[in-house]
Amino acid sequence: MKVQRENNLLHLAKIDPTAIIYPGAKIGRGVEIGPYSIIGENVEIGEDTIVGPHVLIEGWTKIGKNNQVFHGASIGLVPQDMKFQGEKSYLFIGDNNIIRENVTIHRGTEEGGGETWIGNDNLIMAYCHVAHDCQLGSHIIMSNASNLAGHVIIEDYAVITGLTGIHQFVRIGKMAMVGAHSKVVKDVPPYILVDGHPARVNGINVVGLRRNGVNPKLRAEIKKAYRILYRSNLNVSQAIEKMDQLLDTSKEIEHFLRFLRNAQRGICR
Image (tube, rainbow, N blue to C red; front, top):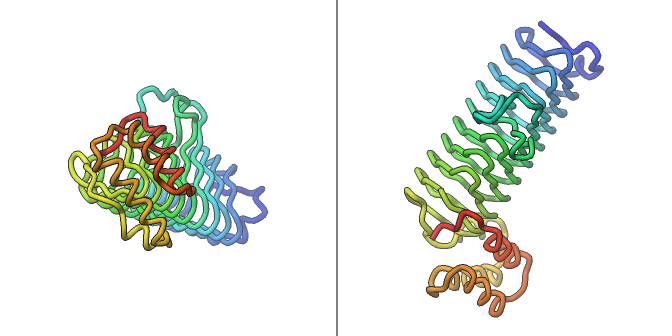
């Protein structure tokens, strides 16, 4: 077994004797690494993270504290991008994430800024794929076998349900929800529920708003915004102008408008 001899915390980690830890790897206090897992030369793993059996973590990958990585996950691998030429690129994963069985997460590419990011407190269920240059916020749920193409952005508290495919460069807004088996090829605005193949708008994610503590007054303003955008026969620019005039100012409404202004692929309708 190759072991990082210079890491003075390695003796405080619980590492199965069949695991392979390359010399340059940095392993935090209280880390557990299961049977037959491989930790690459440039990997950093934060305190109290648990890595299950048969996990591969390689590349320039930095994982924070208190994460759980389950059996068979492959993290920090080279991108599935024909333009990738072996350049140095990165994967950053925050704290308190749960990464379930056989999940695959790839590093960034030069074209996408060289970095894939995953925030804190996310649940990524079995067989999900996070491609190169994706940017995930915090408190996100990705259900089983959901797949993100390259350069996808998912904002905080979004829910992606099972067997969903999301096209490259798509953005999923804060507290939005994507129904199971959906094909998402356009941006999903914050607080919205979409479903279908291709995905179409099905209303407001009322359950998500309530679960995340959005108060009734603000939910009413989001409902007004939804009606203006989807029920008034206005185009997006006209709807933004009307919302600016009619809606009470709040950080949530401002975020909704900013998302619409920056939508480059168009939005789900």
